[in-house]
Image (cartoon, rainbow, N blue to C red; front, side, top):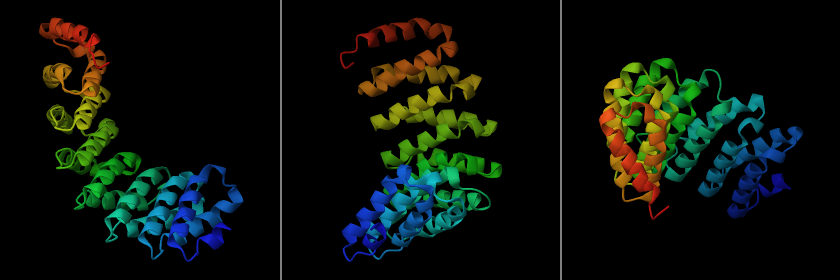
Length: 277
């Protein structure tokens, strides 16, 4: 029935077929997976852009349920679609490439990374944001000699005009933190300290969370500056940001300068009575 409906005259039905097949990924028997992937692949070439986007989303959802010998074909198809002239198709393609990171193998890995890196320059924020996020998901595929270039680009993206892009960049900076070249660690924290002052509360909170996650690579010379910035966030206008600041302080307790201990404790006591919590 799925095969028949996938060629139905109504593009809304074809789109629904693709979405449903993607949603059923965990209950598909092994012997039907190959046929399902082929149906969805055909739908990714549909004349209807909404149908294509649904098929692309479905391929990303299937992840390791895609038969081994079809994975290269699927990834190659998505690489083609990542240059589509419709931003909605590009957005879903990049998201699916990120979700399929666990099945990307062999020589195509570096092609995917280079392609997504280039897509971070897309004119649409709705495409740049997923590209910034996907880079973090593709951590294991990034060649060692590209790490510096990629982290540099993520630092640039954390200053993007759109909050969705800045937030995604911060997320991926955290994901790549343990493979960041040592000579980039200072730049990472200079950037995160700056981003704690972002206009978007979600990005501010993400930057504070990131500092906590990357605490093991904070350069000694920057420990004081990091704690000061977290301390100032105790008075942020958004309760979520204040919550992140309080939580991260506990993780950074070993690097709080002696001269700030009393102020930090007083700030935490004040936060304990925060009316928004």
